[in-house]
Image (tube, rainbow, N blue to C red):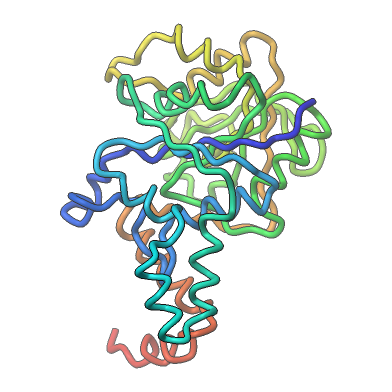
Length: 292
């Protein structure tokens, strides 16, 4: 059983739900107060023991690479001259968090394509996948909880959350499961975006994955769906059919932030603004004073 050292972060989408903002700026770089969404994603991975961060990009995504690069000499000099040493330390730490590897996405639409595109950087190891435009804020980190399940049971592991509103079941891949212990379940099948009455449970499996390198061959040989897309969930179902064990880890002490759509993004900004030590007092006062 090898240590989980690498994570793939797909970040090649067009961000159409945020146009025109994302016409020239990656949706993964939308700010949550003073940090972009993707930095929260990377910080979770690093806090879970990840060493190599493989970011799969597309056109107009250069800002992501620049963000995780070392700060330029002019910015360093400006901060030093301004006596902003703490801020300088903060931005220097960004590039030192992990080894960053960038790969351009190639292939059909679908969330399986960036995973397959990253194969050359994985080197036949078990690896993690997390999306670049959403995250779960939890203690301990979501990926750390999943790695603990992997270390105990082996196999593949998917993060899972309970869907409280029955109508929302149609938005996710819902797992048919059998209980193993506590917050750990063995997945028998994943039903992608079912109608609420057809959902096999209220357990949505999405957001983060620990997968074996066998998934690459499955994706490579997988037929595209009717919409022409290559789905990771279908590949995982095919992995289960081979007899490979796949577990769901219901994330504890956490909250899911889907920053890939406008309303949930705005809710996230407000919540994190209220938690930010530099602005929470004044921001709370402002919100209370609104005539709603």
